[in-house]
Image (tube, rainbow, N blue to C red; front, side, top):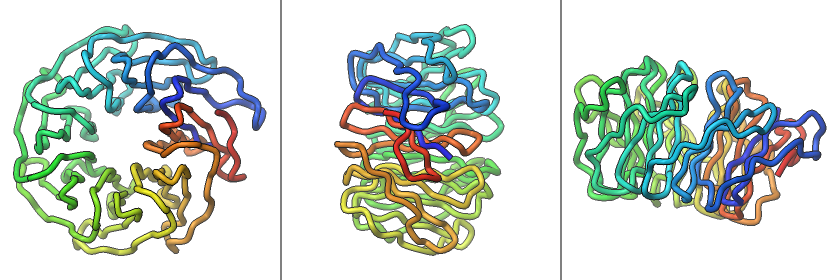
Length: 319
């Protein structure tokens, strides 16, 4: 397996046939790269940067496919629709934008937030988007029209992360306050508030089977929760810095976490033990993301690099 990284080094590099030998470097940014997302078929990489553009790259060749300008502030997050036809981007300009990925054209701009939009996620059926913002709200949007459907309120601090359960019934959101809240997607009803972290919750992610929720926090831990029983299952310790991102492998057996301690850790979910610590970044790791086939993981850092890792070998593959 391979791990890929997106970072502020203004480059992104796709998988390569020879370990340790970069095939290409995707260059063109004039600012830090904050977010990277693989298309559902694994053929295209989307990146977002503080140069206010979204870029699409051919993952196999490294060719720049499209440059999508339009935001007036940093791009905080990018996310593909389940069918891979539409890309969503979230920005510090308080908007979400939807793009036709094939044509490279803006479809709709969504306005309603009053702060930095930090996290976005698609519903499994691709009909709805959820966003989390520093305006202390979670909002639901009609993906077809861009219309604001509802605003979930009750937070007293910034919302950093949002995630949709695989069955589409439940939303999870992580906040600076520092709790995780579970919401009924259909009604907006607050179902549960998960307490246990002692620092801001920067990332939340559902397991592929929807039974377990993972969270990463400023308290330097990764926690696993029983989503049905609202119960803490395990606290994974080992990072020495804030945990900014968590991501499940497609088979649900491994969890990756990125931290301010400059490392990526891989965890055996069944046992809670550390499988590997991937070192190579010289700055905090803000984002980790698995490719759809589970062979590549991406990590993004404030050292302004994008790295690909051979996860099985625990080696950096590209940077």
